[in-house]
Image (tube, rainbow, N blue to C red; front, side):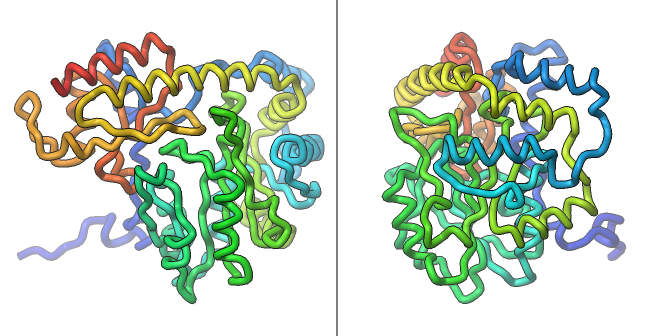
Length: 402
């Protein structure tokens, strides 16, 4: 019997072999391929707003090109963007940072990857509440750390409790990841909840990575509270954010990180040897986004809230679907355990991947299976689409599970 190894098994590192492909990107690519083939796919899989980039932001990018601002910038970002970020944190989040505590990167993914690479040693544990954004555990593994997954519940709106956090901490715990508002659940931690969690980690030499990418998209008067506002945690909280979601700038690839200067310097070093600076033109556009009229952000947030309300009611009316009310972001994450084990159109629904495949291939609705987020009995649906598209998608879903 041949025992020869494939090139992948023979040459690729363990870190790469243990990583999973991003399911959100895979499903979006498949849906786009089917659309290109002429199929009438309604896609609820993409993690980006359907609104265009604001015109003042576009114009700033055009002006940068015309002015010849097309060369390398400082590795950690241009001064006027860092200044705008400092002001944004003060204005919107109640956070105080200096410009030397900020680094601008190629999207929020890079800010997080840089942080894990800077902090994680082999054997370090990183607590990741599930459902989680797909890249958190994979980034931890790539950095050599060990993700410790803590499962939350629908009944608690998919939020980590202090008791769960306490139980997950070991002598090897290095980092807690907190994502609020959450992708994929839309959960938002209020001030009391954040303070209760921080009481658990305070004094334990545990860093908190607070991913606040959706901080400007919250509903019902609820506001995300940053753990960086707690004085006792000031030296232990690292805040990741960006312009992608609030300003419909996903393709511009601008994320930013704030934290202790020594850590930002380490991320600067990593970035200098991997990608160097973020796109120069996009940095100028990001300045315009952060310093311009913020009215458009509120207008779009209000539109997302209308869509949220529609999807919450419509999905809960479909047998087999149960969902918590999202308080932020633009995703809804129904529990579909009522469909698991049933057969539709001759196809047995063994897990959420089967449900997602059935919806896409038989009913032309693209969703993302929950196992990508550590929740195999859920689906993630993005409502970053027009009401007409959402109505059509819901009708197809309802017909699929009659």
